[in-house]
Length: 412
Image 1 (cartoon, one colour):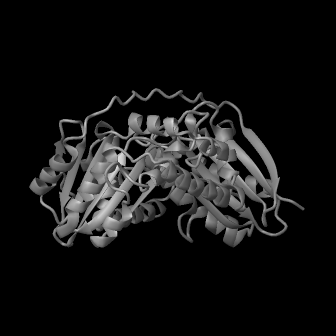
Image 2 (tube, helix red, strand yellow):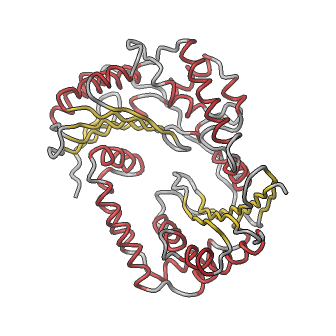
Image 3 (cartoon, helix red, strand yellow):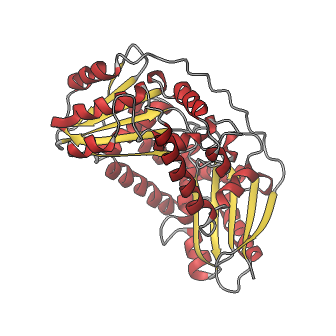
């Protein structure tokens, strides 16, 4: 059981805290409620660009990383379509350095032309390496565009195209910062060797003076229900034909979310999972297979991918996948198979939250989608899933009219 303390500053910054004296370290995890879904369709990639800009100097501090390293700490960040997350870990004696650094870049960035140009080139190079010059690098772009007709999930975190970042102006960068990087749009999660009283004192000292900002109410277009199967075929210079399938599913806070997660583990998690057993080991149709969910805050996707074995067609693999999905729709999952997956979730949950940094990150996310204490109920939600409920979700999800299919062919 993870014990969580709460405190909210007058400027709206939510503080959540968990004391852990088994370590001499403290983690500060700062989650901003902004991701790629909040971008202008003609100016995408900004949330990810900011993940980099936040390390390029703030209003009073030229360099973020050096003070962290001098104090014996580590830092990093990541972005997805829903949130931008920053963290720093430091020995408890030096944790005030983390409060100082994080508060200064929440107050304001330096907005130097040099920093913008450096980080712009870093992001552009990342776009090229991951999405243009890497085999299958554009598959995520293609699948999202096929699955979403109007919701901003139709582009990945990296953005639609390089030109959106290449042409970003300083005024646009400043506008994005002051719209979303605000104490009243953030959650500061603190875990490790620090008392609640000290965490509150340092939060008030360093973050308290930052004024709250006018954060716009999110009003995103709702994706219409898909009514017919969508297909696309592309040819690229890749080694192996690959199939991508996606099915629309619920959002992260929906009561059925955990069922979708469980279904993907039944399909492809571990050597005894169904797709691995039947498509790889028995039928030898594919050399690799995976299924996973996006876990997004708005309605997301359950995705299945498979790389063809030599001499196997994409049509043959697709047919075999549909047959496996039909089994989930018509035959209840046996109790021992269900229990095996649930046990894995429980062990993963316990193992993941042993680490003070992972705990801080997870608490921040659960606070965003409800309350941090909900982290203690995750295992119970998986435990409560029945074979009948899983079959019901499979029946309404794994139908052609809810499916997008991409044939990603190797050029012959």
